[in-house]
Length: 456
Image 1 (tube, rainbow, N blue to C red):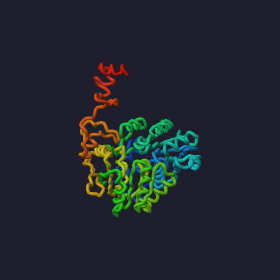
Image 2: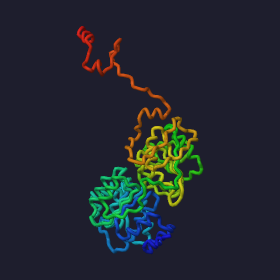
Image 3: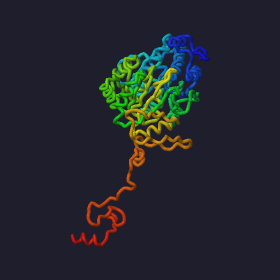
Image 4: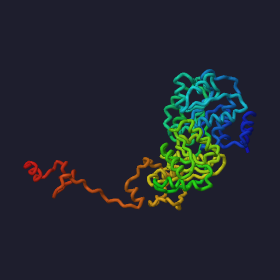
């Protein structure tokens, strides 16, 4: 069994990982660290909770500590670009933890807070800068940050950058980087757009941790509960009565939806916090700390805000709303079953969300376990099992767009066999359709009608 010492890490770094009770490297660490220590570019595909941050932080720290070099005013030697504030703060904490016995300076830059402390932190330059794209570009535009002396660039959570619309900002940052650098590219999934971006950043990269797209943690027990939209809130309250749910992350599709769920739970006597983009950074930090410390049992979040939640001991993930993008389901449930533990993911599926469920099941090539026996079970006819296509992938339906006939038939309702013809508003004994042969708009009008008009 390989240890961190066998990976070639220096003694201060080995001491730091021992202090964190790390015994053996995770697969992504085992594969990535030796190549990164040699200065190779790397394309890493790894699910959340696999030890990815340590996989790139440890080699970067060793490289920077081993060279007597300073970044210079307003500059940095290593840049980690990440999509959310929470994830940026989390990565900065990891660098502080792993580099506790090294003299490696660091700073974190993200929006939602005042820029003056960040400007002061960058005034003399730092070894490691962790940043979100928007605030980084803002400070670069003001002349407070320069990237011309960069040695290592890390693009983390690249697929989430794409989902959040940051891809153009990312490209702007990349254009400002020096051509000679070591580049690391990490993503949980590698769709075509991400593959194209990686190809433009990396030079002869090593590919590690590559697995089939959207492979989920095998330790997660995944189930689905069919429920009408109006019954989701009482169902959530009932599910949360289970004492086995020790710490739960609830996902909603929208920010307003998260706030509504928190208020509803409060009326049911269940304390919960919400975390989303409309919350101030202080409120988000306090909610996350309550959740991490165990003072808060329930945290309601949107996809964007939850990407930076790295909390051990999340026993359950509940998808109150199914995500529009099936890959987001993988990221959501990956918040549980971390650090070798098992976890449970429960999803609520309304009638109009069935196409989204089918997309998720096709992506993972598996059916979720249906829980039929609950007080708020949907009366609609059960959906047929998702068909997995082994050949060419058919085009995905647009979210919430399902054929009317299929919708009614799935619910056990009936529809008319053909729509009634449009009838002229000039109702009379010989009412005619508005179009077609003999219609009012066809130009083939009968003589009696013409005579009638001339007499008027």
